[in-house]
Image (cartoon, rainbow, N blue to C red; front, side):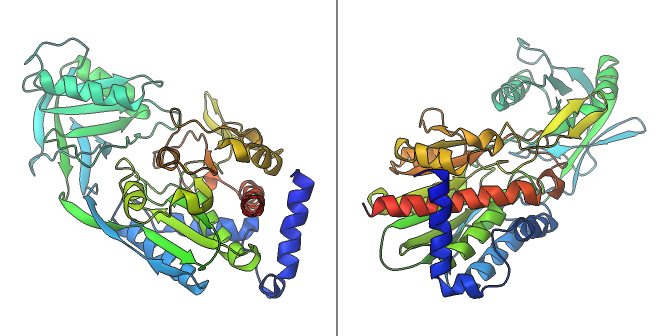
Length: 427
């Protein structure tokens, strides 16, 4: 089915449905989707089980119930990653940062110790009584972060400060496992304070590190919406949680989950619909793992699994000496992967949409994010979206990192894929 046929099919379904003809606002319009991105960002930080995450769960439930879906919200416990203080003081200077989970807390008065640069190969005890300062390169993966902290701990450091160089200059958060336990305070600082902190470290300056917060566990919830009693399942999934406000990281998936749920009630052919927004993402997909274990429909009964991961609707940026500059056009760092049976359909639907225009064959060995679990479970027809954003996992990722003109064509393309997959399941 080529792009013209897909568009005609979408129009035919909408024309045949009186709900679509009588509706007000188009749920897949760029303005409607962008309004939902802004609302999501306005909830604040989206750390699993926190105020913003709970508000998002309640919002999903209200919206999906209003569309006639049956909603359930299974709860699970997750570590509390909120802090009241996360900062390093060196003399008169205070550097705000991000307490990297698993969080180790300092005494109320702070942890006072001299700074010392970490380097690989330190002997046990060589950093005893000191705050290790790790300077990570721009290209360092999360694994390098974890290895440096582990080695600093073995060398006897009482705490670790990691300078995560990135294009925004902000602290960069790293996803972690909820099973990890750390008594070692770890503070992530952004690249904009690198020179000042490294100079103080070279001088062996004394410093005070403070990381304070409630700690412990708190409840989070997945939100699952179902509709229909006959036909194959169409599953649409997206994570809802993240370390910061997640405008470009999570916003497009959140908005399109709501938009597609409304569109599907009006325009989709007979099938069973399942939408799921998972919390616990930043804790190595805790919510997605629970959903696959307890609530996901069988692969043999599923016509399509559509997964909307991080950043896929984000706009492009260029790095300059003066900082990041927004670029025109679509983001070439965005990408799609599809199972073999869906590749031709996906390529037709996403034609002309930047990096999404050439979906690659989905490979379980190379999958990323929560798409890993979809492919590992053996769903025969699946599509996953992912993208690149320089503000990823930083406070700089707000609602400005996407636009209506980036969101709407992706939504239209996804609707076409859903229609084509449903039609193919009947053959």
